[in-house]
Image 1 (cartoon, one colour):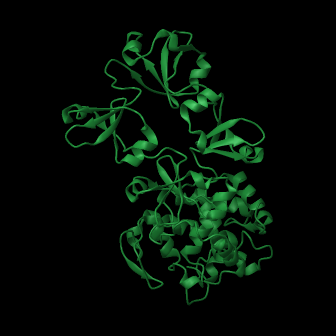
Image 2 (tube, helix red, strand yellow):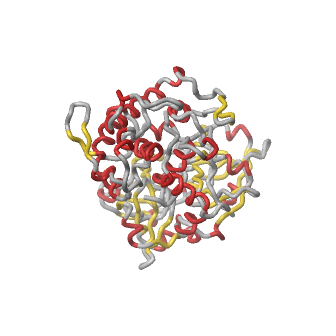
Image 3 (cartoon, rainbow, N blue to C red):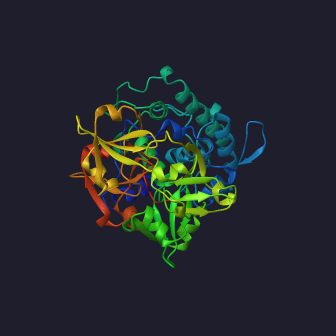
Amino acid sequence: MTNCKITFIALFLVATTLISNPALAAEFDPNYLISDSEITNYNSMDLEDIQRFLDKRPGTLKNYVTIDKEGKSITAAETFYKTALDALINPKYLLVLVQKEMSLLDNPAPKQTQYDWATGYGCPDGGGCNSRWQGFFKQVNSAALQTRDYVDNPGNYYYRPGVTRTIDNLPVTPKNAATAGLYSYTPHVDCGGNCGGNKLFWDLWNRYFGKKWPDGSLLQDEDSTAKYYIENGTKRKIVSNSVFLSRFDPKKVIMVSPADLDYYDDGPSIEYLNFSLLQNPAKEIYMIIDDTKRKIENEELLKQIGFTEDDIIGVSNDELEMYRTESNITKNTIYPTGKLLQDKTTGDVYYIISGKKKLVINKEIMNANFRSVPIEKVASSELDIYSPGNPVTLPDGELIKVKNLSTVYVISDEKKLPIFNSKIFLSMNYKWDNIKTVNQETLDAHQLGQTITGDW
């Protein structure tokens, strides 16, 4: 459902992005274009977010007014917001769609026909457009509802998850409903570079909505010594150098401008070392583990864990409120601060933390997380008492690649995020020297996340 007549502007913008430095480019997988959770994330932008996004683009949608299905005047931003909520579809997807089909985000002088057929809905290949669907609101609304049905009912369509079809002379096997739906909407990969196929959609999606610095990044204000940890899309100030050194790797610090930091909302400060003991006015003692607090059942446990009363820091209730509460530490809580155990029989190494065992799959991941940490050999029966957890992954902020492949990834929240190209890599102040070459097993231990384009 595309007119395959993308304007020169859209193709040129994508082409220049891709060829700026081909030595480092994110991998396009025609079998996986976007996740189901991304395409259905209808809360990803509110009305103000959409308007701000349009204001930054050279296209005219920032000021465009159309008519909704009730005959009322409605702005383009309101159209995207309303139709996304009604269909429970990501407004970001709809924004990308109007650029993919009619270049409306970046074309400063579009024709009326580009508004009238903004999403290419009702315009099948090889046939004229159906006047029933003419009009900007109808186009966006119909595309949103149609896409929702693709995701909800993938078995009703020719392109389905797990079913191989030949598209543009290529075998394509969609890995999920969202990808299958995009091919149902536009049955092209890229028409050999001659149409607005799903390769163009992928390029635009990552160009507009690729993450800047992802969660797990360490940023420092270039005008001061202040350092911040990016978490949940917010910046968390690290209050002292001792706290910084106790938890983070100085080599991963990225120097950024104050304007870059202003992009992020403020999160709670990081004030205490990991495994600090904090005591509230009621004399209750909590252990801080990353961003959680766990109450210690009684003071007798302190000695068992390896702490003394001298390690306790008095704090207010308000300071403790910043930390998420998890289960209490009791006499039955095993290794609340973590320990490495190795199975004597198999040789497998596990990180034991709070009663769970997390497999360390190889030496690369071991050295990245636990260099110089002692390992205790135990019988298999001793390991059986722990419940299994997710395998250990590389630390957040690691830059990695595989030998003989150009793509560089940054690790964030146990995922590998491809960096779009070398121009983006350098513009985000990443350092070539920090890239580690890892084996395929290490790379495969991390799920694929969203491509980083550095664009807001």
